[in-house]
Length: 403
Image (cartoon, rainbow, N blue to C red):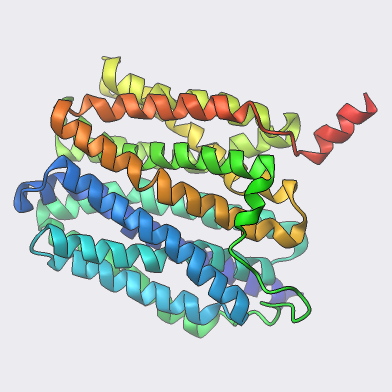
């Protein structure tokens, strides 16, 4: 028992670090974008296109390679190849001499990183005791991803860009993934139950969109993935631009916001267990609109201003609800993983691709305040769409039936 528990902790630690640094690599361009724009002469539209290109291949990679992993019943080879490829692409990003080279590196990186989380979670579920499966998955996705990818990343990367160069920052960002690939190859086993031979072969699952909760969650995913991608690209630019912050100050603000997904992920899901899935999803989606509002109109000392942004950004805790919990509770267990992947893919392909392109074009033509208005609209619309969801919390449903 002790050996099994020790292996479980090892899997959570190594895969948590691996996912955290994968997200670290994805977010790197957002934090060093002011330096990249200055040297390569990029427009706001080109910067947003870099984020959109990565989102597009992230979605396709998650769907295609995740499906291949399920069909082959193999996890570890896909995971290791993904880690090596996205780490090398981070290094290639730092060697890029222009927009098209940088775009190619980011798109290949997205294809490698897309299937990373589903495969990680499949390994974690196989290695975890039943009573800790949800907790372990949440730790990997919300805690490691948020702290490494959005809290530590801006401080480290902006400091490296200022002291050395943005190219050196990309080089450093790629190294941890290569080291972790070696550790995972050595210390994590291939799950022996990756595929049930009696189970039907998985399909792309588009037929699941006939289910009301699934297509509504997919629409919410379009809106809120767009919100977070636009915010990740244009919050740093707005802070350095219209707000007039120094890059180091911007990095500090973004680092503070980086803790929000971890805090929100615990708070929102805890509330959803108590009062149902719909009320927190509606309320915290509305709360997400307050961050861009504060960016536009709230003048206060830096700590108070950061706190105002922080409160709205905590709303990102709704992501586990519409991407995982509600689809998983809506359908039978055998279809839950396919439904989750479908919601993620649709959100990345639409909100992750088109929202930043539109925001970048409007920023070039009418100013950086336009992406903030887009974020307000996306969050508000997500709250309205959430009103149409059917409640799925079994405890709440039983309580209503008894009443």
